[in-house]
Amino acid sequence: MIPSEPPSGPPDAPGPPGPPDAPGDLYSANADIHAALAQPYVEAMGPALTELLRGDDGAPPGLPILDLGSGTGALLPCLAALGDHPLCAVEPHPAMRAGLMATICALPGLARRVTALPGTLDDAAPLLPSRLGAVVALNVLGHLDEAEEERFWSFTDERLAPGGVVVISLQGPLEPTEVPWTDFGLSAVGGLRYGMEGRADPDGDSMRWTMRWTVRTAAGDVIDERTARASWRILTPERLRARAARIGLEPGPARDDLLLLSFVRR
Image (tube, rainbow, N blue to C red; front, side):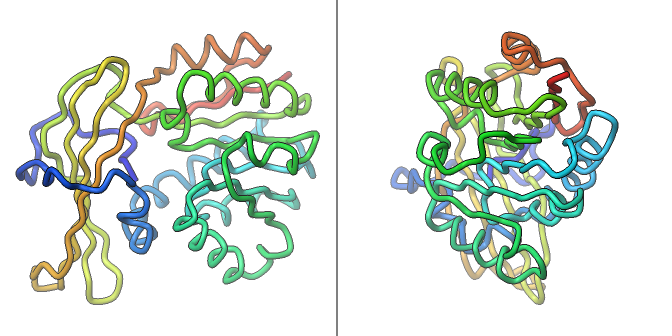
């Protein structure tokens, strides 16, 4: 998982760049430990997502909610707690989808309500409901090229019901700039500690990230380390507002600290 917003100061844990043969598949590299790495993100994003979707501009009662790029489904419990909405979780990566299905089947009530679909939005669209109360796309749009992003907005325009809401999170930085090695925090699960750090270089309108994940004992001994590279297309709140306006969506509540925005169909 690429963090949502890199700190602006100097890195806390500098290190060398990843090896030349670092795998390019970000999620194959960390899928088995992703739930641990994502704990701080979920703790911050969960309440914020609930706040945006439960307010006056929240999802209309009873209509399905789409969680696009659901990952391991860590935020599905937050969506389920909003009310008796059917939930659709779309996740293209098979390794992440294994975690998604485990989450759905392990938590009481989710298996009755969540439909997990493989593939991209293009793949899943024929199986998704004709009317949606909300579309949630957290740390997703930067993975798409411009044509795929355009199809996302066309799909949203076609399926989002009146009163429906779109919630999108972005990732920093919001302009091309070098990001030095930066420590993105540590999660504890039992007797092990899971750390994440990364660096990035600008590449046109994208950022080229090198991510490193380290598993340590409580005493600090390293027992596993993985590195991967990924590209993220830079998107800004201003761009999203302009694109949402083209399909008649108005800005809703936002959490600037999390680069979390919402758009509402009145």
